[in-house]
Amino acid sequence: MAKLSTKYPGSALITGASAGLGEAFARRCASEGMDLVLVARRQSRLELLAERLKQDYHVNVLVVVADLSKPGAPESIKEACDAAGVTVSLLINNAGFGSHARFHETELQWQSAIVDVNVKAPTVLTGLFLPGMVERGKGGVVFLASTAAYQPAPMLAVYGASKAYNRMLGEALYSELKPCGIDVLSLSPGYTATEFHNVAQVKRLPPMEMFRKPDQVVDTCFRTLGKQPAVIDKVTPFQAFMARVHRKLSRWQAALGASMFTGLLAYAGDVFAAL
Ligand SMILES: NC(=O)c1ccc[n+]([C@@H]2O[C@H](COP(=O)([O-])OP(=O)(O)OC[C@H]3O[C@@H](n4cnc5c(N)ncnc54)[C@H](OP(=O)(O)O)[C@@H]3O)[C@@H](O)[C@H]2O)c1
Image (cartoon, rainbow, N blue to C red; front, side):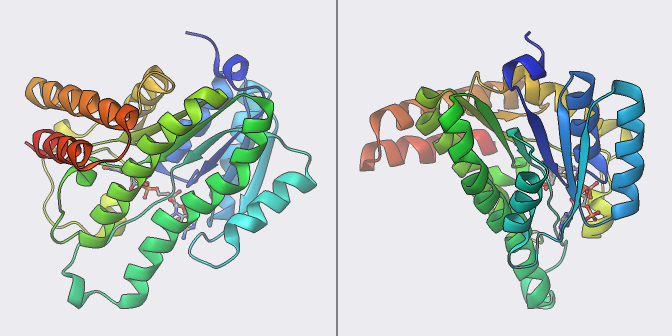
């Protein structure tokens, strides 16, 4: 497998790099020679990580502190990159959070922030960085979906819907951008050992042995990026089979274009993948 720095010459921009999967993405990209742009709200964590990665891998790291729930945050990140002369060749739309509660009992402001961080930010960031990648004929974009993206998610309703959006956006852009030399992936982790469940205040969780490690999810991502539109990280053999069926159906759908027939195919794929 070619090194990431060869495949995507330039910097990897990782949102949500202050914890969990984002931190694992940052370490992996640095270990493969990529310069980094690290984005999140917790400045001290980003700076500590940046120092470690600079020491361990001799890469350049730009820290951009941004709250993606705030209007204009993606634009300010692009401006910071331009001002520093950074060329982003790999965009990992990783920042995200959820809230485990009934919709009507959750503050509307909170639900709205989930949409801003999980939906609006990846859309706008992709829109800002993609034209440069297309111009250069090389690049990669990853959207963090989730196994929650494959069926309605009661008690995590807005979160689940936001992840379905990322899944669909990634799968559609895979087909659109393949001819331009851009790799796009919608990555769906299952339970992964990060701060996510604490932040979301999930009350009941499976045993820790069932959790994946962030590095394992990152491995799945880079094994798959550029080869297929979507991947579910680690699943039972039955789920893996169903996911393969789903991926085939998605590809046919993308190849055939939107129609009632392909809509039905996609629906069948969703039903299978959710089993
Ligand atoms: N862990 C799982 O089981 C799991 C499963 C499926 C999908 N995912 C997805 O994986 C992605 C990474 O989550 P994780 O599991 O690594 O969770 P995590 O450990 O809680 O990390 C979330 C990251 O997002 C950042 N973030 C949250 N709100 C932000 C905001 N308003 N502005 C900027 N950054 C913000 C956080 O940084 P700051 O707090 O410093 O801002 C943090 O770096 C998410 O999109 C999540 O939906 C996770």
